[in-house]
Picture 1 (cartoon, rainbow, N blue to C red):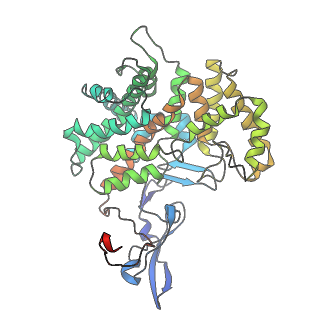
Picture 2: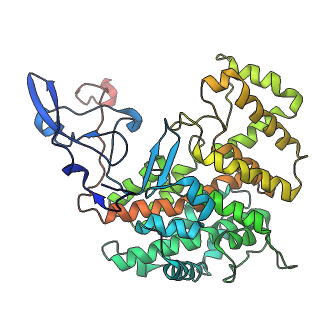
Picture 3: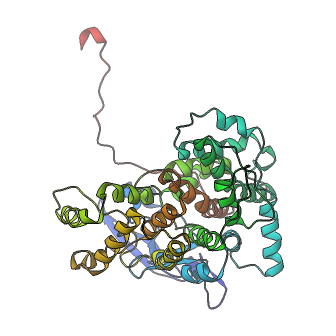
Length: 444
């Protein structure tokens, strides 16, 4: 199902098409219904393929498989389009706030002023975490990767908040959603402070969501700390841009875990583990690692030559995208934000940032990259912004998790409210040993 931006009505995709697709296999021809989405490619419903034919489909990476219906996010990679609930991402990043977008993702519409303010207040009042969590953090080595800490800390919330674990009660599902959105920045700030050996900084109710997050990361008890409004707004935009991205690996992980009836805290712990992978949320950390490996602007020509040599194994990180075959719409938004942050912080002389700027110029003008549509993506610019703010690369994916929490919980909530939801159970193409008899060890 999906929502039409023009009419505001929800359209049942199954009611739109009387089409069917024919498949002839094993001497038998069967018909499967075709459904048309509000936007995007139509789908062939093969849910009865096995029962009707005795065959499964084989689709590694699920590149041609729709595992669910969703009303939340639409992507057209060829056209460079990303929409939340029908709204283009650049409109939301420019004119909205992260918590307003969170409400949109959760409930389907932008709130009026009073509803927005009430929602913001509710989230604000849930930002503190149980004091016993301090002891959980102290069980980790100081050198632990913050994402390792986040996986454990997020899943552990189910041990502290027993009044929001019953997934069959709508009020408890909603309370869990509020708690996850509110507490994730607090956990992230604690993970960062713990890695530094600094005291945890408690959330402050008078601060906005992104301002509060930066305050918990960079303030100390020794002196007052004021977050620059340009940096708070930049962080808010980054969170909006990363809030959801359709059925990616971590979102699919959350949905799959949730399909078993697992509580939402455990499901998001699983999602964070998936996000940690370098092919997913770790991409912006890989950007900084690449810049450090290049070392200086003088080394860029040699590096670019290696990138163009298919036998070198060297990749240009932060350029191109698995989904977007056009300019990443999120990168367009962050380009301007990146310049604003660099201006405010006076970081244009940072050697790594100089390398990044030069790489960007080359990628946007060199036919090799332009012809392959290897444009800078959101990971490239977010990595530069984080670097300029003084956020270490090991925290990049943690910030991604803070943003994506909203999308994960919205997707989980949508799945739990869908009466057609079943436990996920992918099939396989078995290519192992044929049936054989057990032989005792002395006779083998």
